[in-house]
Image (cartoon, rainbow, N blue to C red; front, top):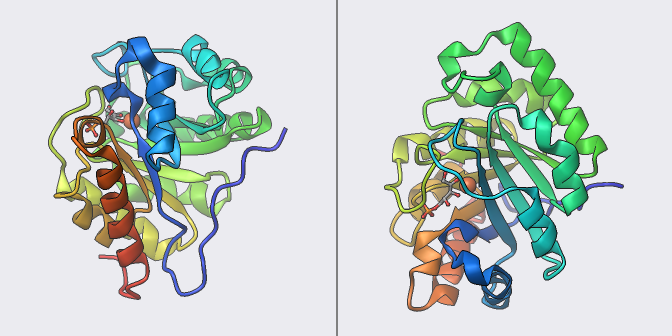
Length: 258
Ligand SMILES: O=C(CO)[C@@H](O)[C@H](O)COP(=O)(O)O
Ligand SMILES: [Fe+2]
Protein backbone atom coordinates (compact mmCIF):
# COMPACT_ATOMS: atom_id res chain seq x y z
CA UNK A 1 0.00 0.00 0.00
CA UNK A 2 1.36 3.46 -0.95
CA UNK A 3 1.72 6.08 1.80
CA UNK A 4 -0.84 8.91 1.83
CA UNK A 5 0.58 11.70 -0.43
CA UNK A 6 1.78 14.89 1.25
CA UNK A 7 0.93 18.40 -0.04
CA UNK A 8 3.02 19.82 -2.87
CA UNK A 9 4.55 23.28 -3.18
CA UNK A 10 2.37 25.77 -5.09
CA UNK A 11 3.81 28.18 -7.66
CA UNK A 12 5.14 31.39 -6.09
CA UNK A 13 5.64 29.73 -2.72
CA UNK A 14 8.99 28.83 -1.20
CA UNK A 15 7.73 25.67 0.58
CA UNK A 16 4.89 23.11 0.59
CA UNK A 17 1.50 24.11 2.03
CA UNK A 18 1.06 24.87 5.72
CA UNK A 19 0.00 21.92 7.86
CA UNK A 20 -1.14 22.38 11.44
CA UNK A 21 -0.87 19.32 13.65
CA UNK A 22 -2.20 19.58 17.21
CA UNK A 23 -0.28 17.29 19.56
CA UNK A 24 -2.73 15.00 21.32
CA UNK A 25 -0.24 14.72 24.19
CA UNK A 26 -1.99 17.80 25.56
CA UNK A 27 -5.47 16.32 25.20
CA UNK A 28 -7.61 14.48 27.74
CA UNK A 29 -6.49 10.89 27.04
CA UNK A 30 -9.69 9.53 28.58
CA UNK A 31 -11.65 11.28 25.81
CA UNK A 32 -9.16 10.84 23.00
CA UNK A 33 -11.54 10.13 20.10
CA UNK A 34 -13.71 13.15 20.98
CA UNK A 35 -10.64 15.36 21.38
CA UNK A 36 -9.36 14.32 17.95
CA UNK A 37 -12.72 14.99 16.30
CA UNK A 38 -12.87 18.38 18.01
CA UNK A 39 -9.43 19.33 16.64
CA UNK A 40 -10.30 18.28 13.09
CA UNK A 41 -13.58 20.21 13.30
CA UNK A 42 -11.61 23.28 14.47
CA UNK A 43 -9.30 23.19 11.44
CA UNK A 44 -6.46 20.78 12.25
CA UNK A 45 -4.85 19.18 9.18
CA UNK A 46 -3.10 16.32 10.98
CA UNK A 47 -3.09 14.82 14.46
CA UNK A 48 0.38 14.54 16.03
CA UNK A 49 0.84 11.42 18.15
CA UNK A 50 3.79 11.41 20.57
CA UNK A 51 5.10 7.93 21.30
CA UNK A 52 7.57 7.79 24.21
CA UNK A 53 9.17 4.65 25.60
CA UNK A 54 10.70 5.84 28.89
CA UNK A 55 14.15 5.07 27.41
CA UNK A 56 14.94 7.47 24.61
CA UNK A 57 13.10 10.09 26.63
CA UNK A 58 12.24 10.09 30.33
CA UNK A 59 8.47 9.74 29.82
CA UNK A 60 5.95 7.06 28.82
CA UNK A 61 2.93 7.75 26.66
CA UNK A 62 1.22 5.39 24.24
CA UNK A 63 1.83 2.78 21.56
CA UNK A 64 0.34 1.13 18.49
CA UNK A 65 -2.80 -0.25 20.24
CA UNK A 66 -3.99 3.30 20.94
CA UNK A 67 -3.26 4.33 17.34
CA UNK A 68 -5.27 1.31 16.13
CA UNK A 69 -8.21 2.28 18.37
CA UNK A 70 -8.03 5.89 17.26
CA UNK A 71 -7.99 4.85 13.60
CA UNK A 72 -11.44 3.32 14.08
CA UNK A 73 -12.75 6.77 15.09
CA UNK A 74 -11.01 9.13 12.67
CA UNK A 75 -9.92 9.30 9.06
CA UNK A 76 -7.43 12.08 9.93
CA UNK A 77 -3.74 11.84 9.01
CA UNK A 78 -1.99 10.29 12.03
CA UNK A 79 1.45 11.82 12.32
CA UNK A 80 3.35 9.52 14.69
CA UNK A 81 6.51 10.83 16.38
CA UNK A 82 8.49 7.92 17.77
CA UNK A 83 10.68 8.97 20.68
CA UNK A 84 11.97 5.44 21.19
CA UNK A 85 15.18 3.47 21.06
CA UNK A 86 15.08 0.69 18.44
CA UNK A 87 12.56 2.45 16.17
CA UNK A 88 12.77 -0.44 13.68
CA UNK A 89 10.96 -2.60 16.24
CA UNK A 90 7.60 -0.87 15.83
CA UNK A 91 7.33 -0.24 12.07
CA UNK A 92 5.05 -3.19 11.24
CA UNK A 93 2.78 -2.60 14.24
CA UNK A 94 2.29 1.09 13.52
CA UNK A 95 1.61 0.38 9.84
CA UNK A 96 -1.00 -2.21 10.81
CA UNK A 97 -2.50 0.23 13.30
CA UNK A 98 -3.08 2.77 10.53
CA UNK A 99 -0.31 5.35 11.11
CA UNK A 100 0.26 7.69 8.13
CA UNK A 101 3.66 9.11 9.10
CA UNK A 102 6.37 7.26 11.03
CA UNK A 103 8.97 9.72 12.29
CA UNK A 104 11.96 8.22 14.05
CA UNK A 105 14.88 10.03 15.69
CA UNK A 106 18.19 10.08 13.83
CA UNK A 107 19.92 9.76 17.21
CA UNK A 108 18.05 6.51 17.90
CA UNK A 109 19.47 5.01 14.72
CA UNK A 110 22.87 4.78 16.43
CA UNK A 111 21.54 2.05 18.72
CA UNK A 112 20.41 1.70 22.33
CA UNK A 113 21.72 4.36 24.68
CA UNK A 114 22.91 6.70 21.93
CA UNK A 115 20.72 9.67 22.66
CA UNK A 116 23.18 12.30 21.54
CA UNK A 117 24.47 13.00 18.06
CA UNK A 118 28.10 12.85 19.25
CA UNK A 119 27.57 9.12 19.71
CA UNK A 120 26.58 8.57 16.08
CA UNK A 121 28.99 6.45 14.11
CA UNK A 122 28.56 7.51 10.46
CA UNK A 123 28.88 4.03 8.94
CA UNK A 124 26.57 2.28 11.37
CA UNK A 125 24.15 5.16 11.10
CA UNK A 126 24.02 5.22 7.31
CA UNK A 127 23.15 1.57 7.00
CA UNK A 128 20.52 1.55 9.71
CA UNK A 129 18.90 4.85 8.69
CA UNK A 130 18.62 3.77 5.07
CA UNK A 131 17.16 0.39 6.03
CA UNK A 132 14.67 2.05 8.31
CA UNK A 133 13.57 4.54 5.64
CA UNK A 134 12.99 1.71 3.17
CA UNK A 135 11.20 -0.36 5.81
CA UNK A 136 8.81 2.45 6.71
CA UNK A 137 7.94 3.17 3.05
CA UNK A 138 7.54 -0.49 2.21
CA UNK A 139 5.14 -0.78 5.14
CA UNK A 140 2.96 1.92 3.51
CA UNK A 141 3.81 4.92 5.71
CA UNK A 142 5.49 8.25 5.04
CA UNK A 143 9.03 8.54 6.37
CA UNK A 144 9.97 11.22 8.89
CA UNK A 145 13.37 11.77 10.51
CA UNK A 146 13.52 13.80 13.73
CA UNK A 147 16.47 15.74 15.14
CA UNK A 148 17.01 16.69 18.77
CA UNK A 149 17.68 20.43 19.24
CA UNK A 150 21.49 20.05 19.22
CA UNK A 151 21.74 17.57 16.32
CA UNK A 152 23.06 19.40 13.23
CA UNK A 153 20.63 19.68 10.31
CA UNK A 154 23.37 18.73 7.84
CA UNK A 155 23.36 15.14 9.15
CA UNK A 156 19.95 14.47 7.65
CA UNK A 157 20.62 16.12 4.28
CA UNK A 158 22.07 13.02 2.52
CA UNK A 159 18.92 11.00 3.24
CA UNK A 160 16.71 13.80 1.95
CA UNK A 161 18.87 14.24 -1.16
CA UNK A 162 18.61 10.49 -1.80
CA UNK A 163 14.80 10.76 -1.80
CA UNK A 164 14.40 8.54 1.25
CA UNK A 165 12.59 11.05 3.47
CA UNK A 166 9.14 12.70 3.26
CA UNK A 167 9.55 15.03 6.24
CA UNK A 168 12.23 16.25 8.64
CA UNK A 169 11.14 17.07 12.19
CA UNK A 170 13.23 19.69 13.97
CA UNK A 171 12.66 19.53 17.72
CA UNK A 172 12.42 23.01 19.21
CA UNK A 173 12.45 21.65 22.78
CA UNK A 174 14.24 18.64 24.25
CA UNK A 175 11.87 15.77 23.47
CA UNK A 176 9.92 14.19 26.32
CA UNK A 177 7.29 16.61 27.55
CA UNK A 178 4.72 19.10 26.36
CA UNK A 179 4.54 22.65 27.66
CA UNK A 180 8.28 23.54 27.45
CA UNK A 181 9.80 26.79 26.17
CA UNK A 182 10.54 27.20 22.45
CA UNK A 183 14.25 27.20 21.46
CA UNK A 184 14.80 29.75 18.62
CA UNK A 185 18.32 28.45 17.89
CA UNK A 186 16.91 25.01 17.10
CA UNK A 187 14.22 26.49 14.84
CA UNK A 188 16.92 28.30 12.87
CA UNK A 189 18.13 24.90 11.60
CA UNK A 190 15.06 24.84 9.33
CA UNK A 191 16.71 27.52 7.18
CA UNK A 192 19.65 25.22 6.37
CA UNK A 193 17.28 22.57 5.03
CA UNK A 194 14.85 24.96 3.34
CA UNK A 195 17.68 26.57 1.35
CA UNK A 196 18.66 23.14 -0.01
CA UNK A 197 15.21 21.53 -0.30
CA UNK A 198 12.33 23.85 -1.32
CA UNK A 199 9.90 20.92 -1.64
CA UNK A 200 10.72 19.26 1.68
CA UNK A 201 8.12 19.14 4.43
CA UNK A 202 9.89 20.62 7.46
CA UNK A 203 8.15 20.15 10.78
CA UNK A 204 8.85 22.03 14.00
CA UNK A 205 7.71 20.65 17.34
CA UNK A 206 7.88 22.11 20.83
CA UNK A 207 6.78 25.42 22.28
CA UNK A 208 5.03 26.62 19.11
CA UNK A 209 2.39 29.28 19.80
CA UNK A 210 1.22 32.59 18.32
CA UNK A 211 4.15 34.37 20.01
CA UNK A 212 6.86 31.96 18.75
CA UNK A 213 5.59 30.89 15.30
CA UNK A 214 7.19 33.85 13.50
CA UNK A 215 10.76 32.56 14.07
CA UNK A 216 9.91 29.07 12.84
CA UNK A 217 7.92 30.31 9.86
CA UNK A 218 10.66 32.74 8.83
CA UNK A 219 13.20 29.92 9.01
CA UNK A 220 11.18 27.89 6.49
CA UNK A 221 9.06 25.43 8.49
CA UNK A 222 5.69 24.46 7.01
CA UNK A 223 4.44 21.68 9.34
CA UNK A 224 3.62 23.04 12.78
CA UNK A 225 3.04 20.87 15.84
CA UNK A 226 1.44 22.55 18.83
CA UNK A 227 0.09 20.96 21.98
CA UNK A 228 -0.38 23.22 24.96
CA UNK A 229 -0.92 26.42 22.95
CA UNK A 230 -3.88 24.88 21.09
CA UNK A 231 -5.44 22.63 23.74
CA UNK A 232 -4.92 25.23 26.47
CA UNK A 233 -6.42 28.12 24.51
CA UNK A 234 -9.90 29.51 25.08
CA UNK A 235 -10.21 29.68 21.27
CA UNK A 236 -8.21 26.77 19.78
CA UNK A 237 -9.57 27.42 16.27
CA UNK A 238 -8.14 30.94 16.47
CA UNK A 239 -4.70 29.60 17.42
CA UNK A 240 -4.78 27.07 14.56
CA UNK A 241 -5.68 29.90 12.15
CA UNK A 242 -2.90 32.15 13.51
CA UNK A 243 -0.26 29.44 13.14
CA UNK A 244 -1.42 28.71 9.59
CA UNK A 245 -1.51 32.41 8.69
CA UNK A 246 2.09 32.94 9.84
CA UNK A 247 3.36 30.04 7.71
CA UNK A 248 1.35 31.15 4.67
CA UNK A 249 2.59 34.73 4.98
CA UNK A 250 6.22 33.61 5.21
CA UNK A 251 5.82 31.15 2.33
CA UNK A 252 4.45 33.79 -0.01
CA UNK A 253 6.86 36.55 1.02
CA UNK A 254 9.42 35.51 -1.58
CA UNK A 255 12.20 36.15 0.93
CA UNK A 256 14.85 33.49 1.26
CA UNK A 257 14.62 31.44 4.49
CA UNK A 258 16.84 32.78 7.27
O1 LIG B 1 7.25 15.70 20.91
C1 LIG B 1 6.84 16.48 21.75
C2 LIG B 1 7.48 16.57 23.08
O2 LIG B 1 8.51 15.67 23.15
C3 LIG B 1 5.77 17.41 21.35
O3 LIG B 1 5.02 16.94 20.27
C4 LIG B 1 4.92 18.05 22.42
O4 LIG B 1 3.71 17.37 22.61
C5 LIG B 1 4.61 19.47 22.01
O5 LIG B 1 3.93 20.10 23.04
P1 LIG B 1 3.97 21.69 23.22
O6 LIG B 1 5.40 22.09 23.41
O7 LIG B 1 3.40 22.27 21.96
O8 LIG B 1 3.11 21.92 24.40
FE1 LIG C 1 6.16 15.40 19.04
